[in-house]
Image (cartoon, rainbow, N blue to C red; front, side, top):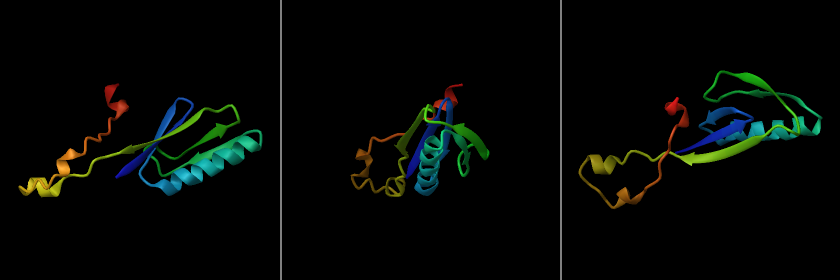
Length: 95
């Protein structure tokens, strides 16, 4: 399963679907071309909000993979699927 972390200046929003992230990217591009505009951020880990975005706004999007539970291993069938060393770390848990 993939999650998307969108950093807008110092704020972090986490999404579980790609479509809202793509919609947000399109809105950010349009706002920066309009010399600044408010962009609504919905369907994220935070309550819905609006952020003023300009061409100077720092935005970064990261994709993280959350490993799926290995149901076969729980049933005693390792099946060689334990080789996935991907992990997801929530930096908010440090504060």
